[in-house]
Length: 125
Length: 398
Image 1 (cartoon, each protein chain N blue to C red):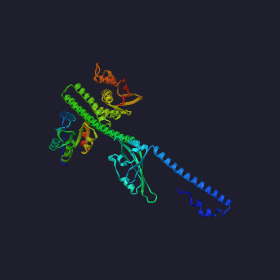
Image 2 (image 1 turned 30 degrees about the vertical axis):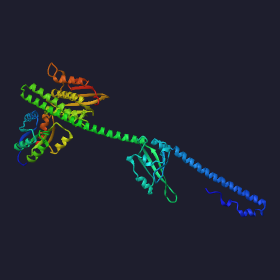
Image 3 (image 1 turned 90 degrees about the vertical axis):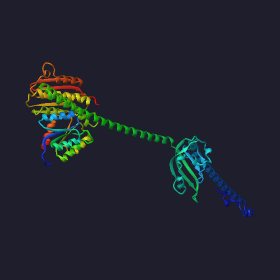
Image 4 (image 1 turned 30 degrees about the horizontal axis):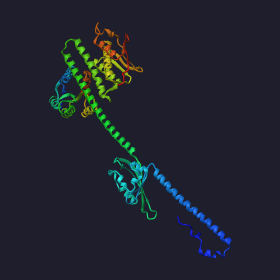
């Protein structure tokens, strides 16, 4: 974790359109997207390969592991800051997200300024 | 009761001596004797009458008692006498029961000789509820209290006495009550499960709604990228703001306890905050003040969209990039009526002519939403800013 992280953002989202939209939002904010992943395993592999400073993480993913599983593994092996992006605020999901001590939790639909604030806060901490 | 006191009997030697005595003495003695004899006879009669009276009394109370009473031979268990109440409970005449075994009338499933045996062994009388069997074979619940009459000296059991109360109605009522209670518990359990299921489904729906709004947002964003016309781009950006207002309503619903209603105040606060942030770094302050009010989807969506339009107008047209302030308030004017006010302290503009000679999309939306909310809109614009007042009826509580 002492190794330097790249100044880019990885997007973990199984909905293509949402991933594409988030990608554009990030580019509009002047950030680089280093890749998108649709499953927890892909997410971990992407993070380990690209070493992004920030990961935008959906909670519900295709496959049997969810975003929290992926986030815990990424924390452990890469050390990226994880910002959860979820459509749900139900207690079960929130409890699950808190397991990972996320840098931020954003609720869909996510606005540009919310994304900008969350990322700069995560990078500063 | 013994016969006449032997002291009162006339003794033979006294008869022999009689002649030697004075006639007066003899007469007096006889009178005295007679008086004592009469008194003794009266006493005997009284005692016999008292016993007869006591027996009649017992018989009357035994026969006419409202609760069943039955006497058994304590050893054989054979019925010696039964009163009409006991017989009637079982559908017999009392004399039909005499000579039968008491246990013949106990329901086979409720036979239990243990309490009686321990009473024979010296325990106190006992009391229990059990089913009896009527003549027609139907069961009847009775509460029996049993005791033993023992001989004064030998303590040998002389008589088994049972008092039997017909508790069939009470028992049936209790059973019915228990059944009703069990039934209710099942119903409550089912309802609880149905409610939990409904909550789960609603959360799932809200989740999907929000996910879909994010997709809509992405589509708008992707389309916007392909446009070169700045007006068109701005129009799509405005659409994104409106989509966000919809998402925020579902976000509030998801966080509410009943998944149907939420407080409008934090919603308006969050919504307005977003509109300010979305405008991007302008030096505009925002003040939101709303009375606590529980609202549902039907009210929150048009109101949220209305506030979005009004605040967006002020952000865009009131300050010309300079500093300023916007105030959003929602108050209960009188019972059943609300007043929504969005006011800015900008340079003033005419909302009707925003976007040129034909009404803008924003103006059309504002007009339509006010109508949907059955409200009345008043706009005043001067050098002190623009003030939009909407008088509207309070939402019907869902």
